[in-house]
Length: 205
Image (cartoon, rainbow, N blue to C red; front, side, top):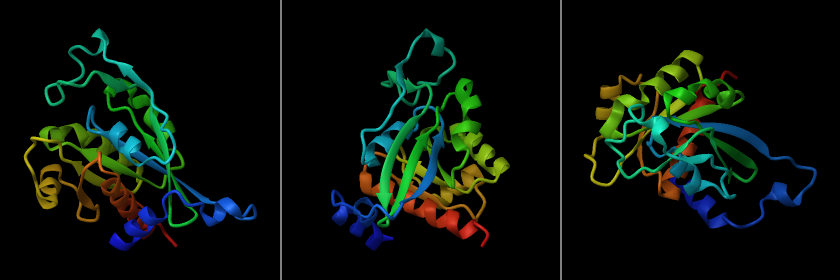
């Protein structure tokens, strides 16, 4: 894992083989980034995308009053109302397309469209509001899409070990649980590689 991340960072900015050879096409893979409101989905996509990410951020308005819990993120002034989109090239000709879902319940009707064709999902969890990721966990369990849980620790929040988070969320043993920082590119890359590996492990031959 560490060597793969190091090689990726060393080669960043260089043209890949598939970019110079018109006879080769990259393997395009879709990844979904899900989780509760304000958990860091937009931050994750922005931190790792090699292109200017598409964002559908809108200012918080009175429509969210009494609906969106800002107790854990009092400084939050915007929210995703459709999706985030970014791209990162891994493993020479493997391209990951990242789709961040909106976190609020009133936008969940879009999830079915966003996950169509995805190989897996990263479910972000905030230890200050762990219960907010239950809907995402239930969704991916019910639809059978491979997923991992990535615990995004915020400044000033209590630190927990993956085993503690697994127990609190009753995450099955087969599902990887990681600690990460959505602001750090290398941390996000490690999580994405973990998801790709997990998706390959559970995909039938």
